[in-house]
Amino acid sequence: MPYLSTPLDAAFHALSDPTRRAVISRLADGELPVTVLAEPFEMALPSFTQHLKVLEASGLIASEKRGRSRWCRLERARFDEAAEWMAAERQRWADRFDRLEAYLDDTHKDDDEHGKPTGPLGA
Amino acid sequence: MPYLSTPLDAAFHALSDPTRRAVISRLADGELPVTVLAEPFEMALPSFTQHLKVLEASGLIASEKRGRSRWCRLERARFDEAAEWMAAERQRWADRFDRLEAYLDDTHKDDDEHGKPTGPLGA
Image 1 (cartoon, each protein chain N blue to C red):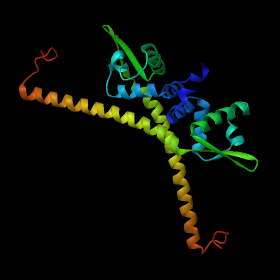
Image 2 (image 1 turned 90 degrees about the vertical axis):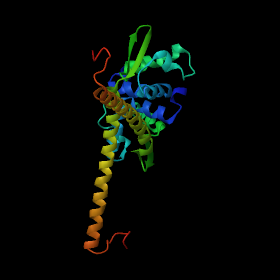
Image 3 (image 1 turned 45 degrees about the horizontal axis):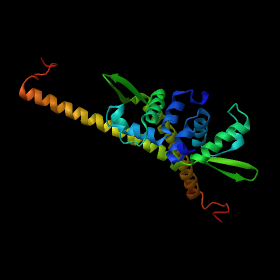
Image 4 (image 1 turned 60 degrees about the horizontal axis):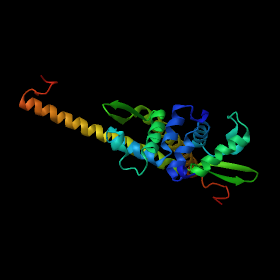
């Protein structure tokens, strides 16, 4: 699927489902065997493991066989990558508003120095 | 589509495509008419507007007709909602490691107070 071609594509796709987000939340408290991880979800195990496969393919979780159980854990690097993309965009936005505010402050100071503005709002 | 049923589902789905993330980045610098917004993307306009529709349906952007142009802008509330979900999970994770560290510190202090541990690692 070409639209899942980059790590960020796959990470955000994995996060676009409430079951998968709930799995992330549960694993944030610590690693768990699949059977225990599945308990709170009212879902057949094959459907649940399908969600785990999407999460694992995205790099957001990893799993490991230990004896007769498969254990799942969060993979922090991929999650951080997605979170940092979002944080960077928010920062970009905040910077834009800071510049806008600085511009408006300057404009206002000019008004104070040179008398009332002559535009329609100041008439 | 039931799997796009919550606002967060739709927001993360919208973010799972590189073109749509690039649109978000461009709009973080300010609102733009669709024709200008489309310029850097090597894509037929109908495909591009399809991406805009996904973004608008997710609530991440809004658009408005002004004269003969349609202008797009970011909708901060929905973006913040998604970013805050991610920040909350990271915090949960950080808290877990803080607790683990505190536990290990305590265990180590006990070792210092009561002599060397008698387990296999301290033997």
